[in-house]
Image (tube, rainbow, N blue to C red; front, side):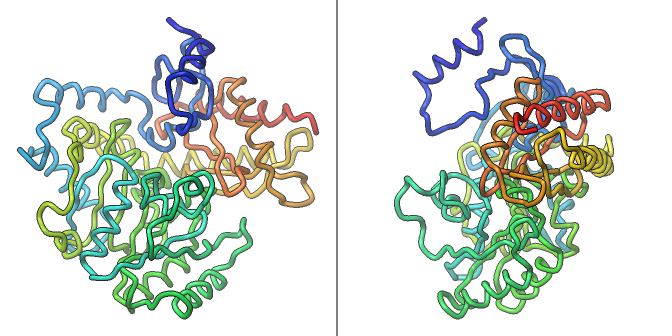
Length: 429
């Protein structure tokens, strides 16, 4: 068996530096919300594979479902010889989608494919080409998904011109000091200065921004967008790639607002650790694309579909919607206690929807100036303490918590204790 240090050397020699790793730790095995590296060290997983593991690592029901599918067949390409497990999964998602209309679903492999194909569907259905997205939003790393993403570095800067007719407006959030009114004024200005609403195919929004810093879209803002889209025939796309599948205490985060999107892009925890994404939405939109216009060789892999069926069963049988709420309250309560202490690094803006929880590392307790460098140090120290932790946000100042919803009470407390120690190791304290 090789060590972390040996693998890091081989990694540097063999793997493109374009793919970054948050740690120099190499996973050997994992169970539920715990990981062991190749050196045998134990970690509590507060990253969940970047929101992929809402039902934990290697949930027995996921492993069993995948194993049973492996004994039948692994691939035929749905476009060549379709299979029932794809159809039944689409039926289940159609029933779960928070849309009071006939719904259809199509499967892909990655979150970027989901967001891109949602836009393709909207363009085909409306005959329009412009798209509106939001500053701080993240929608994937393919070229068009990068154009949708509202952050230049590292997602756009080296790659030349982005796709045309993609416009961005500010995302309303208290942390950024941007009000709902300011965002709506920016949208009105966009309609006056750059593009008519009648030219816009879609508005794409994360109900909770992921990479952007776990900022929650205000319900009144989403209601304004829904009204505007209805008025002008614009397709409203909810990007639920990171926020979906029980993470926020609802199956989809958009449900907290009480509005219905037209299309939902989903991925990550849908597959329980296997590559699977989807677009679900109003039937007339999904059927606007002629046969052959959508798809992908691996889209809706039978292995991933089997895992997804198990994920949906687990969410229901283990009451993970309610558990997400409980976990979020428990984590936020612990963070509130930490925020009052003077012997740890300054933290602020504790926020969360269900178990999609975040807080910011700031330069001092008197203000809220973000400190991305210190946040990076916290993540590094957390790894030394045995906790896998990720940062995000416009300046890298946000610490996000995506612990599996199946975490045991004991492991959660161990993880929070390790987080406390990582926050308390700041030399400024």
